[in-house]
Length: 88
Image (cartoon, rainbow, N blue to C red; front, top):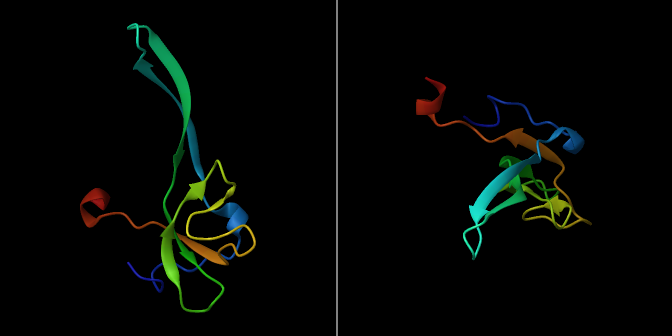
């Protein structure tokens, strides 16, 4: 899949950021601890320099996209492609 197969979306508010999931683990004393964890979604992101495209994901704790700053966010995005075996 390349950028010709999927057009760039310039609405960064439409980019999928991820979900919050409830998870559990055993604590020190064997008790079950339930906690919430953010699970990000990978996207392809385009920088404003006109040549950089990188994989990115939302950094929930910093409220910005990975590989970008709040002052210089990506200008466009595409969904992360599926492996051909997943599409079958």
